[in-house]
Length: 149
Image 1 (cartoon, one colour):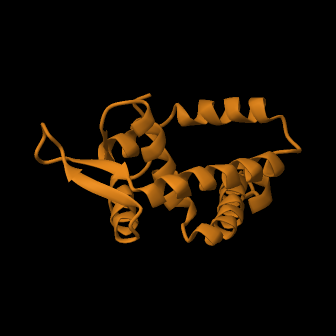
Image 2 (cartoon, rainbow, N blue to C red; image 1 turned 180 degrees about the vertical axis):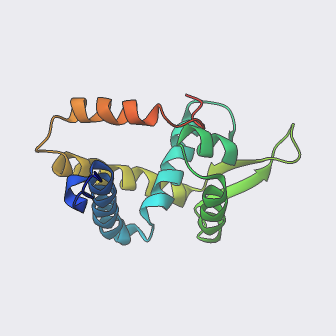
């Protein structure tokens, strides 16, 4: 006997996708005042945070440490450079790689974007146990074979 196909709202994967899309819409709307998108903010903030930890930041670092698709990171970096928010320099050791750094405007948008994102997170997740939810998400992320953390 075949099992009945569940309604979308009965499927955890579907609900997770819908929540992700909802959060993206909310954050994108809030970041419009900075003229950046959510993914642009994630890459700006990642570059800023990794850069303040010391050392050089590469596109590979952003892709690996933020669990982002390499091609997408490359495309977004190009856009951020065009917007005057990021600089790309030849790596001093690996001539095939580039280091990334933020302009003054990029640093400002990363900081303001983080304030916006934190306020949204506080409100968005206010009705659930944030720590248990985060732990559950981390369990699911362990399935990411590309993660190097």
